[in-house]
Length: 256
Image 1: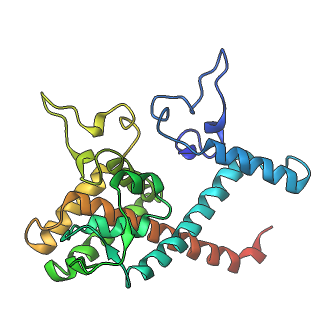
Image 2: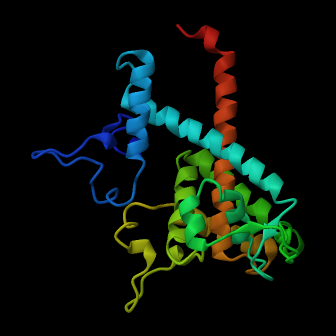
């Protein structure tokens, strides 16, 4: 969120004063963005390690975001390997969202509590290859659109991940955040914590159209599209960051 307003300057960390209202409590951010306590802990640890204040808050935010993607991707890989031996105790459920949520459980504690998922050995007929049987073209279509969106705007990967989080926070991962308001209904999309904050709805629409076209029918739920798009966003962004780092390392000797 820090780079949305006037670039990556760390201004989202500024507290309000009697004459100044900052980004931290601005309408799109209040009761929405979080993690300020972690940044405070990082700042103290870095200043202590360096014996002085040498690392800017903007740099701390950037490096913390990078390390978060890396560490979470390792956790996801371990969880996905574990799924070869375990599946969820949710009866005959074949909704792909719950499969992805199992992989996310270790770092999305708040969502795991809301959805009440418990990973234990079971013989339920849950399969990670559900859509491979129903429509083998579905998951590749989702990844293709997500990849195109990230190439157009790298920040959209984080936005799609956040969109999935916000969907799961209210009554589970049901895709309800995608519902438009009606004359008698105000949905999550325009609710106070989300309005002018969450984004990426246009990408989800593109994914839905691409999947329906690939499968020749509407077979993948919007909730599943959100879950898979979030998963692919984490993978693709971390891949691009790794490739970018490798390229930069090759040309580091040319820097003046």
